[in-house]
Length: 371
Image 1 (cartoon, rainbow, N blue to C red):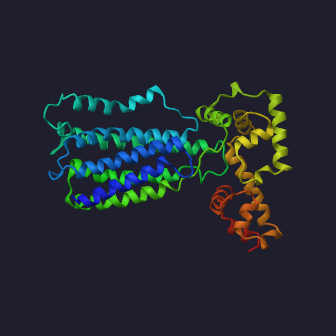
Image 2: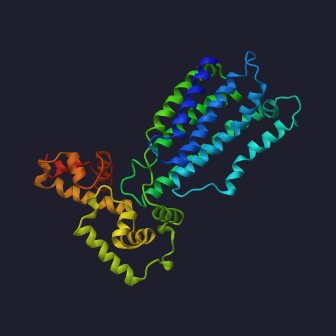
Image 3: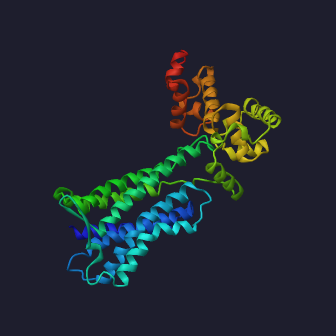
């Protein structure tokens, strides 16, 4: 074990946790502070590995570091919940995630384990490998990573209810963060249960490199929900009870209201071309319609059969098709067409255009003999 690299990784984690806790841009504060705790605890686990050597006789410190490892997975989970839920607050039920930590500390610090290192107590065997108490931590972390990943999938789907451009707020950076953790976890599980010498030899190098990649993705994050408190509460309610899942018989608007609002929505789209605003969101549209965010989502679902994301981007693609088939295509490049159609990036433009037409913008322009 390369003690220097493990200590170096621990120091890098400490620095990253400091940056996340005192985020310079002040964005996603609660989520980042839970993530800072996770990164700090990950660094403490690296430090604990370094202290296992007899050259570092810090028994009491190791005891604390062992106990803190049981908080890693819950802190990662709570961080993810704060990222995906704009009004999340710590609830009593969240304490349940810390039960393994409380149980371990009760046994360890009250002396129920005797003189034996509690982390090294054998629970059962898997083939020729012994499953020790310390092996609970990577298994716990693996389970929570899966829960986090599923939460991000739901988040990405929910974003399409309120935004037409989701690439910058879809938390893809956190998804990459989790993938790197999975890669690190493979080496941790090998160290705990399998013991392949090749993986053990490069493990310190892998951990060090992984910490730098985690730092890279962490600092690329954007503010997810830039709305006021009332809008955030409405968005949370919408996420918890998406309109498409509501039975038709429990419509939020009666037929007269629906007809009147549908006409108003059509005017905003056809005459004012509101979809050309690349910063358009469901709260903005709801404000123009003079209704709640949830009612606006219901209106779009009833009028179009889809969500806000599909509704707005389909209109933008139609505008792009019009521009690509006109003389303006000669004065505008593809980036210009994208922004003139309401998209905020060429990538989002290409993705949406191909989804609705089955071809790229360039192919469409060529099919119209314009390029």
